[in-house]
Picture 1 (cartoon, one colour):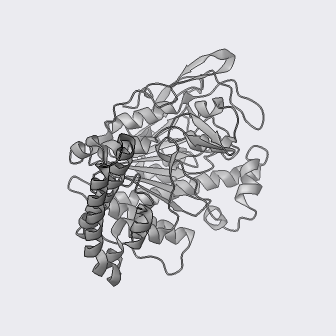
Picture 2 (picture 1 turned 90 degrees about the horizontal axis):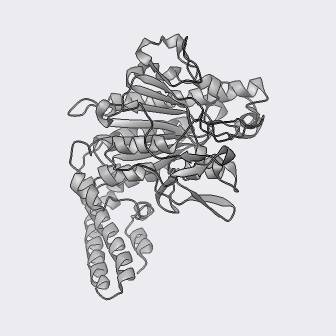
Picture 3 (picture 1 turned 180 degrees about the vertical axis):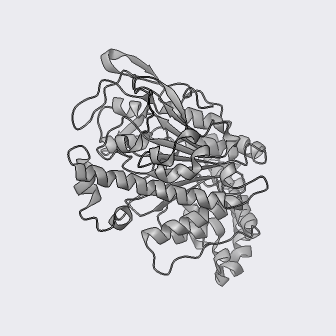
Length: 463
């Protein structure tokens, strides 16, 4: 049986794209789906090109780079916020800025292209495998580890969507199992809310027969599982579980009563982003999913700076360190992403729930593929925004010194050391959602002068 072709015939082709990861099927997910901790949500706000460090970082008198320290953001005036972070000033009491984390393990990797290695590790914290000149992670990404605990078994396990096209995968369900972000906003809407919800009369008429057909298919898989060997039985059972999950989702979403965003008549980056914001807020509000990764592709020039000329990817990003004009463009580029994040935060904060707002129940994590557009891995920017329920102490700027003995490449030469391994941040986030983990899969790497760098454990002082 060709499961994918069968689902396409049912009109569920878009849903079938993520069947291997679309539903929570673990015992942990089923047992914890309705606990208060599980009702929290995770939103990964993923951008590219990072941010110029001197336009992103914040300092106050008496706070030195060589020492660890924390700064209460409530005591910082808006004018003293950095250029890049200033759009988030209104959420300062619910924001934690983490300064002093680096992609140490990615720097330690030999071979492959720097961007590919970084993207394979950025959400997984695991080692990579080179295949056909590209790097792939051998580990599950931290968002999927969290989904194992908080996802509902009858709704979408996670959603990965992209705005702006040219999206590359950074989410991994398992070793080498990529979760490709969907750049077609209409398909994401259909996947989340169902075609019947979007006014498709044909889809509404076919819904009962689709669920009946899925039930029959699940029965066939159950019968087949009794006639095959142990290894094949595991595969068949996985297929059957996915079919049962899709059948359950069709039944549940049909009665969800969610607000379905309208698609723009003239699509653009800005209009697609507005639809994505509305979809995320609605999907979280209706509990259609609890884990979302929003990938933002290259910003068009007009959204970075009116009248900006040249290609950002080729004319400005590579020249961050040797052109003051390009440096300012990339600083403005990161600021534009901060403005987009603030727009999304306002939407979540404006959506009420039984206990407050969606933002109170959501942890938003803003990270990027690299530290900056020159493909460096030191001073990787991290921002966490949300409610207090995840056990993180928000409303502060946390700085760690760069004293990890790993040389860091830059276009102007190597730095003698780096910040703390970013695996520690991923462990911290996983633990905040109740995931019992002490380390990501890259547990230690070899640094400068054969020093053994420990990547285990959480970041100190965040909880």
